[in-house]
Every structure is written in C-alpha cells, then in structure tokens.
Length: 127
Image (cartoon, rainbow, N blue to C red; front, side):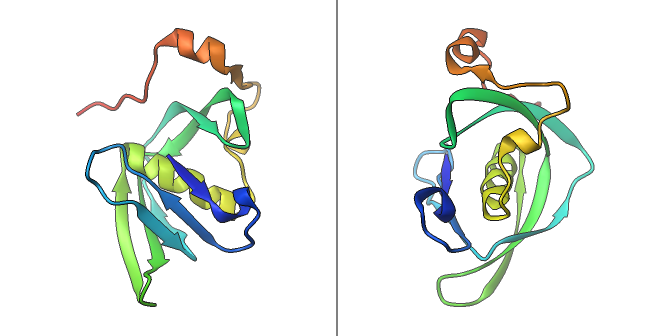
C-alpha cells in the first residue's frame, strides 16, 4: 500500500510505499520520476484512497526504473518489478495528477469493492 502527499492535502512531490513483505522498510519517494519502463505489461485490479469503494483493472509495466532524492539529498536510481513496480507507478501517477482510472482501457469501468471481493482475485504474477 502507499500514499502520495497530494492525497492528504500536502502540496509536495512525495510518497511512501509499504511493501507487502514483512520486515521490509517503507520506500520513501521524494521528487520521483520514472526513467524507464518495460514493454511487458500486465493488467491487475487496483484500489485507491481516492476511490475506496471500487476497484479497477489497470495495465502497468512489469518493471520500472525510477529516480528519487534520498533523505540526505542524493539522487538514487532503483529498478522495481511486478507488484512493487505497480505500487510505485501508482503513487508517482498521483504526483503527476493521474488516478489509476486514467490507465484503464477504454470501455472498462471500476467495479464495486463488494463485487471485487467475490472474485477472490489477488495480484498474481508468474514466477
């Protein structure tokens, strides 16, 4: 899960992402930008604080490379894959003024969270 500063009324290019793996530190994104993305994509359901009662299928690259400023002012480049790439991309989109609904294919609409829960479908990636 993650949250971008503009979602909580803070006008800064900052976000934080909490990876799903236990004991993995949060990823702090300051002035982030995506510098590269894989051609290979997949489509998974996403949710968002902005639309907490619906979920939507959004295509995303399976790998992204991003630059961010570290807490000590250095520039860091990191490559993210699969679910983490999706989360990072989602939060950077917020900083660019985009919601996941803007990534959805034409003609596809979000579904109510109750319907999503009945799918039993979590993010899945082939090993």
